[in-house]
Image (cartoon, rainbow, N blue to C red):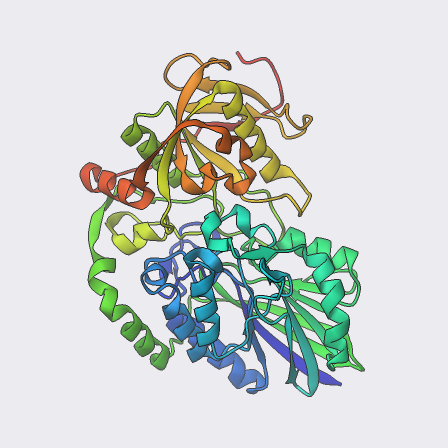
Length: 495
């Protein structure tokens, strides 16, 4: 009988500094940061011995100002300091392009594993598919799975040289090879999201554990699907997951799953000193005050609980951002994607770093001309993205809007779920033409919004982040608008 301890994180999204909880059991707590994470890891290693696995399930490198300014280098420095054993590729790892990602992989002292990420030219794997490590006397095979729909979530240029393949055939291909290389225990390090992980466990045998990411679930107990245990540890450095396995003759006979909220006072001093060194060259830019928040500026559903969930809520800060884009471009309608990264900005001064982690990518604002019917097609796709149970097509969450309101019924037939659209200013005409503002990711068909690639009279209006920042500088203190733009309701004739 042997004991294998797996420590795990996921979806850190570039967050090396602490943040303030704003809802649920996190409300009022100071959470995260490199020092707290290092302290929790050190405590776990002290309790279990140094012979543990430390894994990250992707979306580590991007989405904050320090990540952007260093193209993820700061995160790799933190990863190396914490002595991770393996990580996989999330959909935000390629946000600085594949060549930069290749450099970060080369700088990491631990292997990056992804069995379904290949070079378009030649079809060779972009990085290792798996590694086998001896832990607690057991040979543990760690096979990585990148997010297969990454091309729908980032700029096309970032992934032009690589292809994200179906994870199921990748596991079928490499699992026997990993067993031949001596793996006794099979761990899949996955960025598929909880729904995708459960699907994988249902359709494939032979996976003992899935350490997951992407859907930001704070799982205090392991989900068991067949004989596979699935775990995940929140997002933005909220938690450190720990899974302790009892292994007998290559089989998991018992397990214990815990989640440590990183709100403790056991801060590792060496990690804090490293953090100060990483931040120091960029402090002036990061700490610059760009405005003031009159209240909490919140992105909806950035953290989930134990279970898989539909990301279907109207997001207050994204409604504000959509309003800004519509006003600044003089558009009739603004559309922004439903995304799940970013911690809420508390009332008071807003720094550049706080705003940047809400608008992290170098996307530009784009306007185009669409008919009312085409806009409705986009809204229909948003409902499909949010409510489909097919992991092969599910991507993103509910679209965020300005200039329109709409009602939808997810139980209706595909293509007939959006049953009422109205303009907030003027009369909605399905056959009328409207100027629509969005960003380059969506305009390029991101999140499967293919209708947006058919827009006429395209025009670019500069950086989305800079447009939002300038507006906040001029209009502070800022508050998010009231909700009521998006309503899930049974189909009925509008009043």
